Amino acid sequence: MAGPAIDPTLYRERDVVPVRRALISVSDKTDLLPLAEALSAADVEIVSTGSTAATIRDAGFSVTDVSSVTGFPESLGGRVKTLHPAVHAGLLADLRLQEHEDQLADLGIAAFELVVVNLYPFVETVRSGAQGDAVVEQIDIGGPAMVRASAKNFANVAVVVSPESYSAVIESVGAGGTSLAQRRELAARAFAHTAAYDRAVSTWFAEETLADDGDLPQHLTVRAERLQTLRYGENSHQRAAIYTRAGGHGIAQATQLQGKEMSYNNYVDADAALRAAFDMVKPAVAVIKHANPCGIATAAPHALDEIASAHLRAHECDPVSAFGGVIAANRTVTLKMAENLRDIFTEVIVAPAFEPEALQVFKLKSNLRVLQLPDDWKQEKLDVRLVSGGLLLQDADRFPDDIDSVAKDWELVSGERPAESEMTNLIFAWKACRAVKSNAIVLAQSSATVGIGMGQVNRVDSCRLAVERAGDRARGAVAASDAFFPFADGPQVLIDAGVSVIIQPGGSVRDEEVVQAARSAGVTMFFTGERHFFH
Image (cartoon, rainbow, N blue to C red):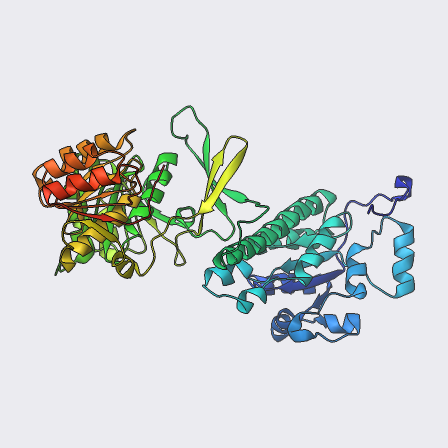
């Protein structure tokens, strides 16, 4: 339905609007009191709600409760405060029109020239791990209504949604009022703010639906804010930037503690490193080069410094490829690990935390980029990939928390079930394989990779590459394949190298041929029934 038609010739000129009355209702109280002080000094009437009014009043400034304006008490636990004509008429009245001015006078309603509103902390509540009704209660209703009403009426009202804008507004109030250009800019920010807020809410509902085994969302809106323009993309002739989205909690939200500016490829590799290291429950480190692991390992048994041990074992898998690599650790980086990295050229290291002594060592490597993950970092529930003309959406490929129990149900199709220590190694190899680009083959000893074959167009070549990189370490290793073996030639390469156990999804029309090759060699083979392609 269209809005009311009004003759444009009836509009009066209005550029600078003096601020006589302000409505303030903020969840984030940052710099609230300096704003209240400046408005009070300019004889601006402050109308406010709930805790905002109490904060202003406790500081000694005069404030009018919104209930005095509406003649209706705040009710339903604060759900209803400003949803009232006495408020919204004051926000929406276009005083360029004599008709609106006359109606306000007849109704006994005063207009607002300034509205300062920031919304309930919905995103922060989600990030805190809250669920259910605790999250729903942080969905703001009155706030977005006030913001949108004021932004629509920018010809008469300045709307502020962030403390970052307070200083400019204070200056304008002191200079006689806000300008039309300033109000238009503030309105644009306000609409972007409410749009991002609504997207965060809709995304949460979509993810909650997925958690309840519902369908993927019918409509998907992805919005992100540019965080930084990068020097270039994958290659020097390509433009690039890093964007962060509302509700995100990944590599884009990491804090850079030191080092050169992150590049496009640095971000890609750092994200791949997180994928590899954080699949592991035990202290683990992944070394990544060109988005592929050149080493993944957990700590050696009884290691005094577990994360330092995990790094050394990951590095030993392929020291040549590790040169200029990106490292992710799933535990605090210690001084010992930092010292071990002293003579290894590394582009980026990312971890949840760093010992202060470790950071002192890293300062000697001024070009090393050090990234600290946000406190609420977690792996995403959904994977999104852009394709020409659209995007692909899928459930993220994750391992169950009780994978040890799941492993008990893997189908033993050849040989005898290994001892518990070897099963631990096998589970490690199966997890590590997920982080490797298909076709993926991982050889592991004692929960550390010793050979990795990746990205080949046929599986037998990946087997050869993994064996070549492992060398003598292939003998007695376990091997994991991210998808089934279509022929027996791939397993035969592994068997000839001395691999003792092979794990794969199974499901090939030639499974019997593959299994027979393992049986003939006396090699143990498991079928998991689940593949882990990573393209």
